[in-house]
Image (cartoon, rainbow, N blue to C red):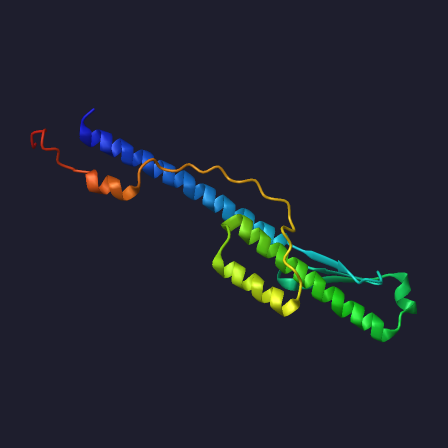
Length: 162
């Protein structure tokens, strides 16, 4: 096998490795998108009268009142509802941030958003609200693509021109 053929074969192997890496990234993106769509946060008032569930983006999907809600003063019930809504929305926001962090890694922008939420809502940042997702297997190419272009010579000086 001549040098040109070796270089072409190496380049094909690099392209195959890059394609496999792109497939893994696409799968990771789809997994993150699916987890974001399914994220939810649930919160119950301290007295247990109100339970709220928030879905992606903080949209409230349910508000459940216990039997004691009938006996609760309306102003207390109102405060319970507002607190439970805020906590449920905060929980789903943290869950979605955790999905992004696990899927894309730590980013400065994500940290700034989470810091801002922490200041605005006063909720402390949880370590992780979801179990860690399995890490995708990655295959790294042996040589950087640019190196192939630098070394690749279509016309090998040893071979006669045709």
